[in-house]
Image (tube, helix red, strand yellow):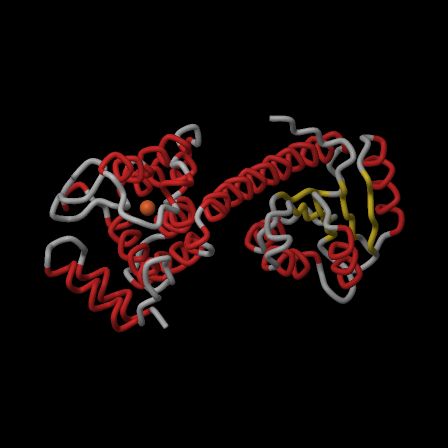
Length: 318
Ligand SMILES: [Fe+2]
């Protein structure tokens, strides 16, 4: 991974002109672009304009102090992952603790030597660039999911809706943060394997031959393969592979039964079926919510779907 930090944008806020100039010189010497603010309020404006890679805040500043600015920065979606260093002349332990609880990434005493500051700046910038690259990878995955929709005009918006429905059900059922993240991602990617199914088969208006049906039924396996290089996707890959399995073992591709189908996958299956039947298809019109739930409950009574998941969905769907 290329984590070049030269040229990174750093905002420094301090009401002391002397300190501000000293820091500016030091950081510019290391090849960084420096933007200055003289109080807390101004620092927020500069941060908003510059969208920096790192923010250095003096603890004591007029209007808003460093801790207040830090909290605002960390609560703003746009800047929540931007590293913040708080600097102070006091060096009191309480200041360090309150900086940490305000969400600051590091704390420095102005008396500390400059080497320490530059090392911390460099390591936080590397962290920021690593996060940015992860963000890019996430966007690439989302674009890939969109590519499936291009192949099949009847599925426009399907992945996003399934992801949203499934996440809502997961929240309602009290799943933890990581499970919800996996569900959101798996929802976007569950049909990614359709990239490997010929368009002619995906869009074939009439009946499919057994062979053609077999190719379509292979999409969960292809989907898992596409995501296999991504280490953090272990759970996501499992959900993708199993999103067409049924609790009674009559699904595909592995024909596994209820003991092997985890809650995340059960949720995905329900969300997927619901969105499919409530959307227009070439061979039929979209069903209403009531009709869709009748179908889901029928599947529950046949032992295919999890009744608790359908109940939870019934409570959250609009
Ligand atoms: Fe699917």
